[in-house]
Amino acid sequence: MDFMPGADASLAGLAAASFLSATVLPGGSEAVLLAVLLAHPEQRDTALLLATAGNTAGGMVSYAMGRFIPRKELPGRLALLQRHGTPALLLSWVPLIGDALCIAAGWLRLPPLRSAFMMALGKGARYALIAGIVT
Image (cartoon, rainbow, N blue to C red):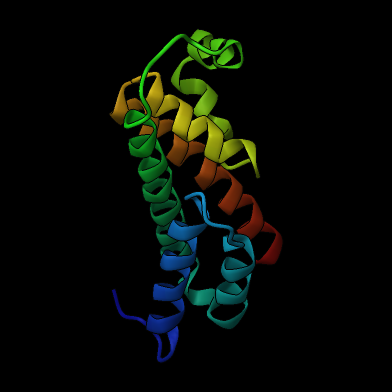
């Protein structure tokens, strides 16, 4: 993969912003993706891959955090996630509820590989939609 001059730093920043915005830290990876696509449109596919991978990795950190929360009685609001299982993680990109879904998935001990796959599908679709608007 040959990167254009300046694209290396932009792509690294995108990966970091995508990762951090998927954890409980606030962030706007969509804005960073837009900036990278406007500055380096030839890096569209790489940017989409890095944004999706970084955001999914951050979601899995939240998932892992959920596994450390002591298990007690199932709160009523988690029953919906338990009923729908990993497909509910297609919504892990949604602001505010996405972080909670990832943490809850870990707490519920949903299968990690399927959880990561569903997160990646949802997050990747969102980034692809954004990229489709720009390019």
